[in-house]
Image (cartoon, rainbow, N blue to C red; front, side, top):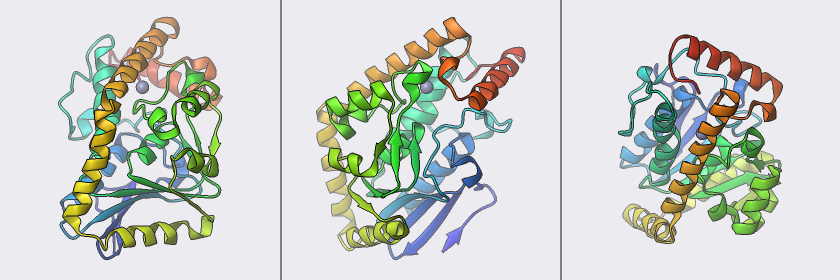
Length: 298
Ligand code: ZN
């Protein structure tokens, strides 16, 4: 029922019930912070669920107290893009200027999230505790979100001089005015507030989260597989013809304008003044090391 292959160290693939895959982020010591290793392990797990004809629904869950602390800004333990098989066609990850970061964030953030969002089968995010910045992107790419009463959601990147996370889905999740408030203030919202906005489907007690999510997945899995795929695509297409993809690309361009701006002003891709001290120190050290080695920073 559980698989952790030699190449999978931060994500666990489980089959807790017939026709259900459960993909579990298993990096509790780092609050499931998402670096390259986790990104490509998640991608492999989503692919596995997609390509297994017996699986109808995939759950994205997380070990420990918090769903996700977001992107791992402390680096990737010495690993680079060369250690992984990239999925998209953007490259130039070592190029000068803004090119490297644009290609990298296309590969590991925007296009990767788009790929997971467009997975052929229904997906459900099972969220507890903190879901911060890049963690939002992981929850949002799923079709449904079940959250525990202790769950909270926050995009703090305006504090770092950036206009929202790379997969800019805030307006679609919260509505225009709530999205602006969420982004302008960087305040966290509770699971119940997120549910009131339509971002979260169900809020349940913490000790019932796993069972409630699985029960919902099992109910969906009683439906015909092809009809589920077609229904998902039909609803996603509604969002797409409303301009979601165009709006996200525009936001992504602004996101990179701000990365480039911060690089010009501060020498790093974010405004370091708004970062927590420990994150700031790690980021500045990593960027200095990358620059000394002549590579791309950030
Ligand atoms: Zn970015």
